[in-house]
Amino acid sequence: MCNMLRLLRAVRLSEKSGVMGMVNRDEFFREVTIRICSSLEIKTALRSAFGYLRRFFPLDMLSLGIRDSSLSAIRRVAHVTGDTADSADEIIPVPEELWASLQRWEIRDPIMVNSDQSELVRALAPHLKLEDNSGIILPLWSAEGMLGWLTLYAWGVGRYDPAHVELLGAVADPFVIALANALSHEKLLKYRDTLLDDNRFLSKELLAQAGDEIIGGNLGLRNVMEMVHQVAPLNNTVLILGETGTGKEVIANAIHFSSPRKDGPFIKVNCGAITEGLIDSELFGHEKGSFSGAVSEKRGRFERADGGTIFLDEIGELPLQAQVRLLRVLQNREIERVGGSRPIPVDIRVIVATHRNLESMILENRFREDLWFRLNVFPLVLPPLRQRREDIAALTRHFVVQKCRYLGIADIPGIAPGALARLMDYAWPGNVRELENLVERELILHRNGPLLFDVLIPVGPTDDSLVQCETDDDHTVLTLDEAMAQHLRKVMEVSRGKIHGRGGAAELLGINPSTLRWRLDKLGIEFGRRSKSV
Image 1 (tube, rainbow, N blue to C red):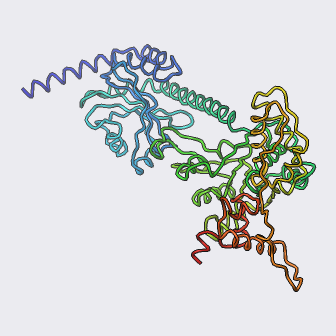
Image 2 (cartoon, one colour):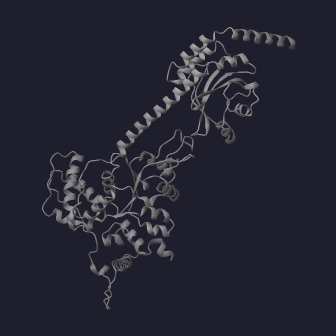
Image 3 (cartoon, rainbow, N blue to C red):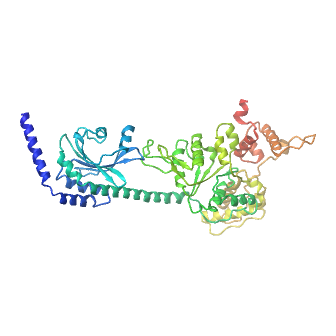
């Protein structure tokens, strides 16, 4: 019985070899070329070639694979089976040693897997599901090197012979052309998607590039604007300091749009608004498969800002791990995506802003000292609104016009006599942002005018005896910081260490609680839990 089976198999092989010998090679080459080059959609073209090749080969699956350096893995660009359903692309991870061997691939001739003794092919077979099946691997080489390979699959062992290998080798060139076209087409589509993604992103993120005059640029912000004009044409990092609501983003906008990078992107990031677990991915991007949910590669904010400016607001909220990566960007002008292994160069200008006292954060090990030295090259300090009261009238009129347009109010109401005086007497703990919100609230309440601004409650100490500083009998002259520290300690005693809320030190002083904490930090005055633990 066994001898009979061997005889039948030998007869089938000889018949098969005879059929292969009768193939018109020129016609075979022409028909395969027509089919595999029939469409830029490689799966469509491969399915067409699959149907024709089945006339000459035992064939259950046909696959095109490449070495994907970005993933350090094999990627099936396309594969088709006898089933009419579309087959999804597949990422095939391989061990590090095998990946290194694949990088040194030098085989150019077709390989019949089951009979090949190559160590590389034996190691590759399990990953390509060829261990218990028959397969022919056709390496696809172009002038630039090896593009990838075509694999023919037939379920079961011993279904291919040398005649099949020889015939498949005759059509290597059409498959090289098809794979090269498919990869170029894929790259083109990726560039297109990148541009569409950038357009959608920038439509949300890009600040308006109107050449608007900054309110107060000739008055309260005159010194700041002079410094803006000095630094804008250069490429150095800029640090903007100031209380919350003073307009740090507006100044960053002015620097960018006055610089040679004005035609490039201007990407803004609020470091305090991104959770710590996502900050690296959001800023630096990630590779496909780098963590759960990373189903595709993502470019971070730094890559999106290439050729332009990135504005990192609230830099004091940046976690220490992200600070290390930011330091590398500032030093080397390159980033590395999460899960990536290759540096990506970026041509960017970095502008950062904060309302925090970074020097005190360094002492508490919450901010890196080396990053501080990198950032503090050209600091710009924005004065609070209470120190530029001459700008309040112009800012109020500007916000009235702007908010009327936003709220859909056709007739711009007037401002009642005495209202501007009330605004100028107010301490503005929330600065320009508070004024903007107040104008919007007033327009909602008095849309037909006049605008009274009579909801303002004067803030600050009303009983001078509460916060009087002791007089120096010896007439010792104190520095401004010493006088301020002495005054703040007295106020903190009066409020019994309470900072915010009714009767708190911030309310007594007429400033924002965050601003008060910043001042206390800067002057080295203990408060809250720290003062209790001393």
